[in-house]
Image (spheres, protein in one colour):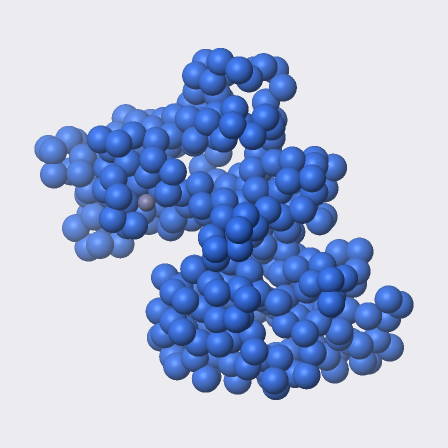
Length: 325
Ligand SMILES: [Zn+2]
């Protein structure tokens, strides 16, 4: 479709990122605005409509037109109805029919998927996954998300509204509590929240921690980056948490690789910046625990698109949706 563009939108808790994309994954415009997570959903919708119209004008000035919109939203979604069921980043959006309302305002097809799935679509389109037919995507952030790309396409299972939820696979039934109410999930070992909780527990247990960490814990301002900084400076407690993260990731991926008969994964999300701290333990677990796998065939890659992967994936979602229209 010559001169046609899709708009990709990645709605996060802090920022909304938007871009204008051609069918080959070329990006022609980029916008970023605060998401005002505490505001009402109608205000967010209004801001999205305004920004989409602005991008439609940009497309027109380039001699083209926008044909569809793709949305990536963190949380549990009813994708058939285009509704947000629950979003930890945007609690006020619960129950809001975002996609139909955007469609009504813009008069063009609007498609919606969760953030981990659009991460996978983005990496499969123009990122690290573009030449790998089968792989598992993992996003390490406040929580842990996941997706499965099978034969080059996003796996949606029975369309129950979740698939690829690797974060809630149990890796240790006696492990730490998870935000979902279960104990020992991958997310309880490998997320930003798990790092912060781990440091808090170490302090409660009377361990000696770097002063910066102790101060940040007392004021409630500790971030996963702080824990990484402590590990990087050699703090044994922080290092232990990253080793546990790597072990848990290796175990979850090893189990899934064995079940699916595949050997590739792509890891993204903000906490993947700590790659050098968790990667050795992850690879050691993958090399030694799953006995069916050839250690030399295992391929674990870092996201190629970084924080923009879900934005690219949202645009890819729109293009793929149009093909089925
Ligand atoms: Zn869980």
